[in-house]
Every structure is written in C-alpha cells, then in structure tokens.
Image (cartoon, rainbow, N blue to C red):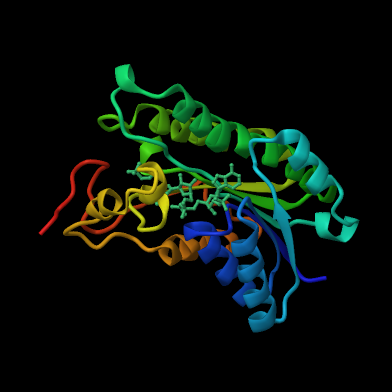
Length: 252
Ligand code: NDP
Ligand code: 8X3
C-alpha cells in the first residue's frame, strides 16, 4: 500500500486543501470530520480524480471514546499512518474575558487541545510501533502572540505550541517527526464559525487585504513532509504579506 495521511477537520479550509494536495501526491487518506455529507463528497471526488483510497471517519475529536473506537477498528493496513495532520479546530466568539461564554470556552479547549491530544495518543501509538511517522500540528499566530479578546482561543493555540514541543521530545526515541504549522489570517470558514454564521462580520475580517488561502498552508505542510527523513522542520510561522503581527495589518 502507498503512503497514508490521516487528516482531522477535512471537510473545509486547511484540512480539505491538505486532502487534495496529499491525494495529488498519491497518498491514501483517512479523512475525519463531523459533517458526513461533505466528507463523502470530498472523499468521492478525490478517489475518482486521483485513483487513491479514502477511509471516512465521521467523528467528533472531543469524544475520545467514540474516536478511539472508530480509529481502533480500522483494518491493520490502514493503521500504518505516515502523516497525521492535527488540523480540526475552531474559535468561538471574540469577547473580553469578563464577558466570555463558558460553552464557547469549553468548545475551544475541548476541540483544539483535548481533541488534538486524543487523536495524537491513538495515532502516535501506531507510529511508535512502526518506528516512523510525521505529526503536523496546526497552531496559529494566536499561539505565538495574544490579541484583544482572543484570550481563550490564543490560550488553546499556545497549548498547541507547547504540545508540539513536548511531542518532539517524547517521540524523539521513536524516529517520529513533529512539526507545528502556525498560520496568520487564512480565508476559510474559520471566521464564519467564530462569529457563529454571521457572514458579513466574517467577511469584514479580510476586508482590504489579501489573506492566505488554505492551499498556501497545505503547500507549507507538504514542504515539511517532503523533506528527507533526517530533516525535521520544528515549526513555521506563515503570514499574509499584508499582516505583520496578529493585529498589525496593512489594509487599503
Ligand atoms: P474551517 O472552519 O474551514 O475548518 C475547520 C475544520 O475542523 C472543519 O473541517 C471542521 O469539520 C473541523 N472540526 C471542527 N470541530 C471539529 C470537531 N469537534 N471534530 C472534528 N472535526 C472538527 O477552518 P480552518 O481550515 O481555517 O481551520 C483549520 C485549523 O487551522 C484550525 O485548527 C484553526 O484553529 C487553524 N488556524 C486557522 C487560521 C485561519 O485564519 N483560518 C489561522 C491559524 C490557524 P466539521 O465541522 O465537519 O466537523
Ligand atoms: C487564526 C488566526 O489571528 O484569527 O488562528 O487568531 S487569528
């Protein structure tokens, strides 16, 4: 069997772009997300276009029992995962700490931190057994800086940065590569999700600048993955040219 990539959050944005790019490179894919119809559509399109095989996992990364069950019951040949892309994640709301919403905080922490941990624990066991693999953790500029009202989302991405560094240490004896990819503004469904479906507020985030597109990040991930086996890219911070920091943006 050729190489296998497992991508979480594959129904949209960066995860969907990675699915396309890795399929084009001949990888078989395990695609994971909650929206079944979309995942089925993407899987079928990639199988038809690239003559690869796709396993769909309809799952919520927050539910570790269900996640473990679905991943553990994959056939043994599908557990020979070469690349795990820990991409599923989201922001909910943009409020000062005193106005924050408990449910939003739980959703972000449970998805961005705990979901990433659950997936990593399961898949890194497979990688340890085969003594190889590459884990890509999608962090953010929000994991390098904080910005007004970003509080809990920024905290989750700082946690991803810490976990990326920790994984690199813990998995070192097993020949597993670990890379954080930290994007600035990428126009995906991210802002629509953050503002809970408010499309006009989401659109304003990208007003007057050329943001990154999901494929820019997929290409950076592919660069890291396609280095020779003795090379590990520890992290990459990738910004739109018009964005210097989380908050310093050149808008026309
Ligand atoms: P999108 O909203 O376009 O995609 C998010 C993906 O995550 C979807 O496929 C969604 O699928 C999946 N997802 C969300 N929650 C869960 C869950 N509980 N279980 C399984 N899958 C889930 O956003 P992006 O592509 O922009 O986001 C991808 C990653 O990139 C995130 O970690 C985000 O924090 C990070 N990022 C984004 C930036 C940006 O500006 N866009 C910048 C820096 C980092 P479904 O709803 O079907 O489950
Ligand atoms: C997403 C980028 O700047 O909205 O991680 O936090 S930002």
